[in-house]
Image (cartoon, rainbow, N blue to C red; front, side, top):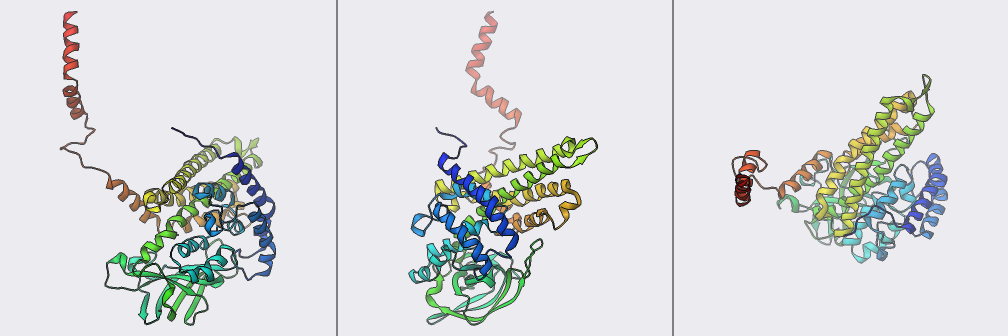
Length: 435
C-alpha cells in the first residue's frame, strides 16, 4: 500500500516556475488589458502571445489535454496543482491554455466532432487562435436541459435552430457556439435534446445584449442574451447522436465543475495571504491586528476551510485520473461544486472585514472575489442541485434497518453481542465460579 501527499520534484519545479511567471508577468498584464479572451484585441495579443510561447516551451500548455490533442497529458491532479497557482488571475488560464469555456468545448469537439469540424475549430481553439461560446442556459429554464424549448428542426441536409439562450459566455468574442436544442420534444426528458456546432457568422444569430457581472469592470459584459432566428447549419454539425445532448453536455460539465474548483482553491489561498499581510501590517492599540484573538480566529477558520476544500478538490482530481470516467466520481464532483461557493464566500468575507473600508473599495480585488462566490454557486448547475446529487449517490448504497430499531441501537447490539459471545461468556462465568 502506498500513500503520500508529495508532488514529484520535477513538476514542483514547474509549479514554482509558473508561480514566478504569474507574479512577475501575468499579474501586470491583468492590470492593463480588458479581457483575456478577446483574440481580436492587439494589445492583448502583444502581451499574452509571448507568455503563451514561454508556457509552450516549458511544456505546460493545455495540461488538461492528452498528447494526441497537443497537451502534455498530465491529467487532472497535476492540472489542479497548476490551477491553484493561476486561480486568482484573470489571464492566467488563457496564458496556460486551459481557460473556460474553451477547455470544455474542446473536450466536446475532440469526443464528438467530425474530422471536418475538428480541423476547422478544434486545433485553432487549442492554439487559442479563436475563442468559443457554450450556449446552453435558457431564460425560462435556467440550466435545466429538460426544460429547454429552443428547437432544432431536421430540414433535409440542414438543421434549423430557433429560440433564445441566456448567459452564453464570450459570445461576442467567439468563432463558434456550441448550442443545445430540442430535436425530439416527445422523447423521454433526457433524450429530447441534441448538441450542435453553430458558426458565429451564421445568418440569424442575434446578440440581444451582452450582460455584465457584478465586480467585473469591463466596459461591455461578456455573457450574451442570444436569439436564434431560423439559424441554418449543415447536417453534420451535430455533436454525437441525435437525442444525446444531455450525455454530450456531461463530457464538458464534469470537467468544467472541477476546473472551477481548482481555480477557486487558488483564489481562497490568495485571500488568506492578503489577510495575513493585513493582520501583520495594520496597527491596533499597542500592537497589530495579528495580536487580536478574534482576528486570529478568523485566520484559523479560513485556513481550516481552505485546507479541507483543497484536499477534497485534489482527491476528486486524483479519482478522475484513476477511473477516467466522470460518471464514476459524480458524487465527488458534486460535493466539490457544492462546497466551493461557501468556502470562497466565507474566506473573502473575512478578508474584506480585516481590510475595513479598503476591503469594500474598488481598489482591492476582494469585492470581485466575493461576488465570484455567487457566480460559482450558479455556474454549471446550482449548488442545491449538486447537494441533491451527492445525497442521491450516497443513498444508492444505503440500506434500511433490518428491524424496528436502527442497527446501532444499543440494546439490540448488546443482545446480539451476548448471543455471539455466549460460549466465551459461559466459560468466563465458569472460571469466576471456580475461583
